[in-house]
Image (cartoon, rainbow over all chains, first blue to last red; front, side, top):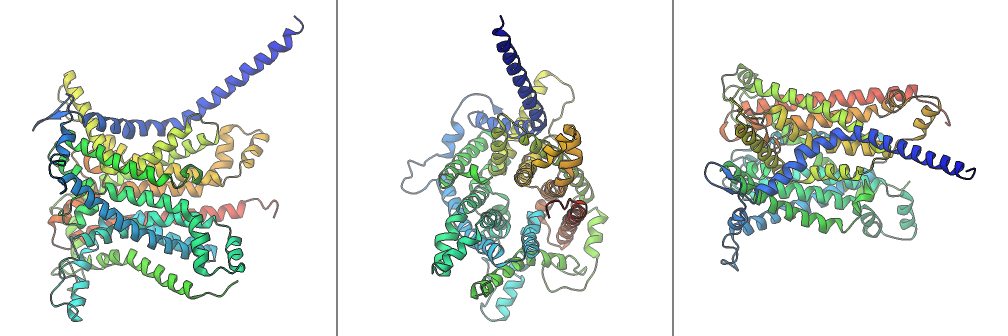
Length: 311
Length: 288
């Protein structure tokens, strides 16, 4: 009896501690719950519905809740038969990947250079904040307006064409400046280089400046320091920025539609076209294909770096 | 300190070229929106006037811009308020032990990078199915559950909340937890410690979350496209106008929209500066 009393006390304390723990966790989830609920209702559930409806049938007026793989089969229709030439879906994805590749390469080089300038050449803290703010402000303004604003510059009678004609560089206005692949790449770089600059800049700020001094003292040239010190240490930022840029361009349909004059196909635009025709299951099947393609790219990229460590 | 080499000047030139690239086009339409009544979509300017602004607000034109303006404004303010409250609350939750918190974090990141059109399609499907269910239930005069403040607001929150949460993460990564411990040791309740210690310190960043919340909603297009219901927000009207308008009204509308953005950005930045200055004034000088 006398020996069990302390045991009992310890037991009680344990129960008490567990209760406090549970209560704390409960309070914590009361605070985090509303946000989780919004994501569950407006993101996770809709995503699940996209997958579900992608296996449904449809006719001209309605969607029919009966299992079928029609949406997928139609998307890949003729893909095997037409080999080695590409079917529509594969062509669209090839076109999209080409755009992704171009935009990614440009934003990577440009974003890295901008971030490098801000992180290493601008030494005054106030200037650093002011200049990075200067790069951020356009992100808070409308993408559509930033697209529209290319019209007076690149249009047939736009500033660029007028200048070129007057200078005698070309005889008649260039047609490929606006509503073309060129315009799409230009606008995407214009809109989304920001998503590369921020994570790379962030990674660069964490680099210990003494490492650069050490590299310099050990006789490394500027290029060697860049290649062997700065780039490896900026890798997490580069990967995160790349994930942002690549996923944005993969799923984009607004920029490609507007700047491409609705003439350029892309993975995102296919979904929109299906939606406009009210073919929801077909749109959903294309959305699932897009998700899988994007997921594969992210998986490949995140093998390069432990994203969890960088948050 | 080393001398500034050629790298500095080359990258500096590139940086300012990039800034010009960022702002130049927008400035062009800002200027062109003051085009004279006879002017067209591009230079030269044929006089300077407020003609296109007057035409814009006179209404009767292509679409009811005033109404779209009001809708976007109300939706933006609501999205901002919800984003701020939910982000701060969730951020505080992560300061305690939050079992399964990783799920929330990964969901937020996924919401950020899943293509907008997919999220938008999902919400559209969801509300279609809800309507079908309600109709099957036999509710009379039911039109749709889809609307600005249901599906539309939800779509915007899937875009604004991840930014809010990530900003809170960045804030609390640099937050000195000893301040909260000190408050607790002095007998403050959880609420008092939040209200009088944590909130004043994080307030500049909270204003930043509000800035993201409003501007991202105000300009949102891709997610709204399928999920907004029968009425349009301002960016959707703008996109619609792009293909039909051949006069500078669209520039005037662009100038007004950008003007609102800049007002909000300016107000937020001033507020953040004032709050930071206040902190510096009243902040402790212990240990200095």
